[in-house]
Length: 260
Image 1 (tube, rainbow, N blue to C red):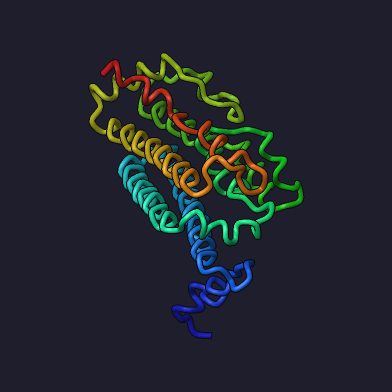
Image 2: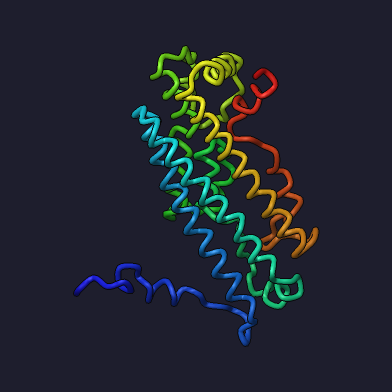
C-alpha cells in the first residue's frame, strides 16, 4: 500500500477515538475529549524530547541541548494556550456530562506522572493507581529507577570540569535531589564566567518555570469550572492541585538568584 497522508498519520484511528458518553451527546463533551487527547500527545512528545536532552547532556552536546530545550519550551507555551480553549466551556456546560466520567480523572494520566518522575518528583505511592500488569505501571517503574534530568545535568557539569561532589553523581536516583551548597557555588561560577554553559542553566530555569506556569493555569481552569468541589475520580480537586504549586524541579538554580 502506498504511503498517504491519512495512513501515515493513522487518521482513521485518531479521528474515531473521540467517543462521547453523554446522551445526545452534549455538545461540549467533544471539546473536552479532544483537548485531553491532545494533552496526552504533547506529554508524549515532551517525554520524547526530555529523553533526548538527557542523552545530549551526557554526550556534552551543548548546542543541541539548548535547541531541544527551546523546542520543549515552545510546546509548553502551546499547552498553556490550550487552557484558553478549555476555559471557553462554562461550569454548566461541563456539568452537563461530568457525571459520565465516573472514576475517570486526569490524576490517572501515567504520562504526566512520568514527566514528574523525569523531573525528580518521584513518589512510589502513586504506583497504586496503575495495576502491576499494565503498560502504564511498567513505564512508571522504569522512570522511577532511571536518572532524572537533573542527574544528567550534574554529569554534564562534571564532564566540563566542574567539581560536582562524587556522592551526587552516584546518588540514589529514586530519592528527591536535595539542594546542594557545592552545586550552587558551581552554578554561580558558571553564570559569572562560563558563557557557554550559562545559557543551558537559563533554559532549564525557563523549563522549570514553564511547568509551574502550566500547573498554575491548570489549577485556575479547574477552579473556575468546578470551584472547590471534589475532583473526578474522587480526587481532592483544586485542594490537591494547589499543593503542587511553587515546587521547582531544580531548586539550586533558583537558590542562586540572590547571589548573582
